[in-house]
Structure formats: structure tokens, C-alpha cells
Image (cartoon, rainbow, N blue to C red; front, side, top):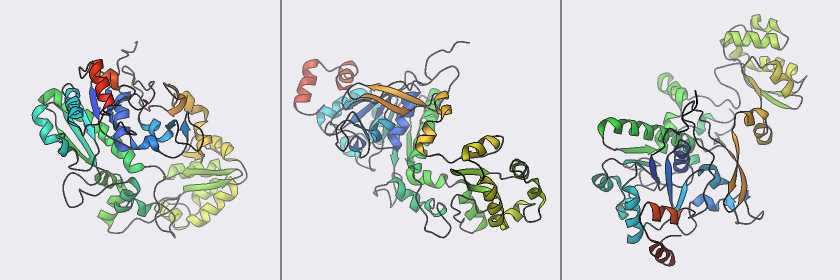
Length: 406
């Protein structure tokens, strides 16, 4: 059966006031799903991540020219509207955009948008069908609501950092902005649920999503380990404090990770390593025995694994949960990445070709559209102001002259 070709959120319009990671990643996923995302940016520089350090597309190395790799990661497929909404003229334009919008996303500190009449309480009276999602560090109320929030700090405060790292060293942060990423995914889920509910109720609603709450939810079974057992989970580096073999092991040319967590997997791993007798050895026969004697088990496994490369072992162990530890070059150049369609190359309107990791959503009938590049700052200002806000060319020119739009 042929695909309908219509992305699942086609026809949904999102007014996006978010910046940096959590909000922009959420709205990028919505854009991939077919929503029209109007990204409201400060005409003076735009989203903070446009000025981010590191590799840039289209600029000279070591300069701030071109587009930041940070910005292009989270803003695919959006329409950039460079607009100063702190001015009365800018606020009037925002209201014209909200009149036909389905969703608004923002991640300012609680109370900031109230100064401009864009808080939920005010907007709900005027746009009762609007779904309004706020992302904040600690929620919209309470003694911590006024605090700024950054991913590593939330990892630290939530207990997440305490379970990451080596047992004999202080806890460390996850290298990826995992709290921001999880918050973005939960935001997409919440918005889709609210859109589904609106179909039946005819009403929009307010979604208060806090990075802190998301970090706590992300503790998963480790949070329950403390709540039920009363003890702090122990750091175990690349291993696991309550499972074995579950660790990284050296090979001739790097490391491989093996997670043979149950009895059958352990038995099959022993056979694949050429030592079926380990499965019945009293030191390793049961999970509790393996955890107790993991140092000796890991020494024996390491001796065997050092006889070949990580790629060779990955092939020999392909029927088991085991895989080579790859650096970014090895991971993103691996043929399966391209076969899955996960690498995209976009032609940016002003900066030339840019490589990006695409969407991981694969719908059979309503495929996502992750083919559109991230926008240049203000690239769609005129299009949106004319087509959606009803501004004339002369009005736009006047607003641009006064630096209200860019």
C-alpha cells in the first residue's frame, strides 16, 4: 500500500519561543512530524546557540562566522521569525500568529512572559484552544522556581550524577545533555497527548514541564533501588554493581561492551568465548556468584578477548548483547547508520551543505519530513509577517528600519 505522504502533524502550527536544547529539540521533532514551527528569535543574534563555540558551517575556522553546529542540531525545518516581542508592535504580531496557532512552547524563567502578556493565564482567555507548554528548571511555582537551570546542575541535584562514574571517584556528569534531551522527548509526548485530548474536549491546556522532575523520572529503577532498599546505588564505572558480566573489556584494538545479564546469556557467552566450563564453575554458576567474583571472571574474559580485535569479537558475539565501543568517527561512519537513513546532508540557504543526524521516527503511512535545513536568522520573517500576520511590504520595511524585526 502506498504511503499517504502526509506527516502525522501536518496542519498543526507551533509558535516557538524556546532556546538552547530542551525546547528547540521538542519543536524540531514536532517539525519533523509535520507541524509548522514559527521560531521567534531576537533580531539581535537570535537563539543563544547560534553564537555557540565549536565547529561552524560556512565560516572560517576560529571565527564566529557561519552557523553553529549547536544551533543546526536542534532547529531543522523551522521558520525563523526575527522579532522583538518586547515592543508593542512585536506583541501585536505575536498575537496575530497565536490567533491560528495550536501550540505555544516557551522556556523562559517563570514570570518573564507575564510582563508582555504572554503568560498562559492571559492567553487562555483569548485563545482557549491553545496548548501552552512551559519548560523550566524547577517548575512554575515553589521556592526554587526563580532559579536558572542547566543540564549538568540538574544531573547533580537529582542524584543522577551520583550513580555515574567510577566507584572510587566522585560522580561525574553524563557527556550528553541527557536531562534536556529527556525533557524534549517528554514535551513532545505531552503536546501530542494534549492535541489528542483537545479533539474530544475542544479545549487547550497548560503543560508545566520541569527539568528537575524529568531528571527524577529518569532515575528509573535506581531511584526505586533507594526508595525500596534504603541504600544509595553504588557507582560502577562501565560495569554494574548488581550484574555480571556487564562491563567493557579490552581487545587488541580497543574495547567491547558485553551485557550478558541472565543465565542463558552468560552460558552462551562462555561458549562463544571458547570456555563453556565457566558456566558451571562454582565461582560463576549463579548471578550472585558472578557478582561476588566479578574481578576473577573479568580477568579470565579479558585474557580471551585480548586475543582478537573488537570488530572480530563483535561478529563472533553478534547473537549476544555485545558491541564494540566506538568513537564518533567509527559510530557515524558505520554503514548501518546510512542504511537506516540516519545521516542527512542539507543545503543551507546561506551557508552551503551541512551534515546532520536525521529523525529516528519511521512511520509506515505518515512519514516524517526531516528534509528541511535549519533556518538562517530571520529567513522567514517576511514570509510569515505577510502570509500569517497580514503585514504589507511597507509595514515590514518600517518595522525592519526600527529594528523590531530582522
